[in-house]
Image (cartoon, rainbow over all chains, first blue to last red; front, side):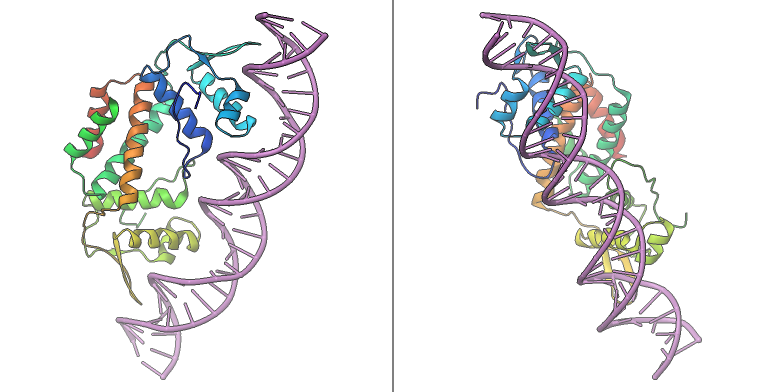
Length: 123
Length: 123
DNA sequence: CTGAGTGTACTAGTATAGATAGTACACCTG
DNA sequence: CAGGTGTACTATCTATACTAGTACACTCAG
């Protein structure tokens, strides 16, 4: 694996979504620093053994979210990190939190259990 | 709305998933108590204006998860609540938590912000 | 007993999204 | 110029979500 981030492709979720998540995680945790070169669309598709089109969708999404910056003719570079402040994603996050709380309760977890799990995942 | 729970159908997520979530939420919050009669498959499909097949899928999922109990020839009843303890769903929950943490950070939230949001959703 | 309502199980068809496949073009660097 | 880059298309395949319709065994009120 020569990629600057780690991914383990598993069924159940859209492919591009999993990779976008992996890259985002690498950025917010500092594993990918601003200015670092990001693999080209074609390199990405070869390394992950996915279609160039899917790789392009991934890179496009990351640029749209401000995580990557395109350098025409050169490639893409990890952008200087800044909060996204996207209202739609904020709303989606709230919805995810609601679902998480209900699911956790249904699985028998206490509030403390869930908060601990969140803290553990934050690191 | 004569249903014993509240749903607001919105695009983006599978229909049956939204209803299953709404019912689960009503059960874990005590809005639906054990022994309460649950709408029949046909009544559900009429009230929600969805296909009987989709309604059946919803009821089937809820029974499978132990939230409803089938009474052959009568209908379904809200089951006595007990933690699910499903390994697959536990793993899925952990994955959801990971995603939530990364997404929240990317949106500029602090750990405290997220923990507060969780506490708010728990109530 | 009869009829209506119940869960359950099928077969089909349609629409959409995810992923693949292939081609093309303007751009920059060596 | 040659090769690598982002970007933009069209086309095809597959799985999922939803709809549509039918059928059967069960239980209860009449």
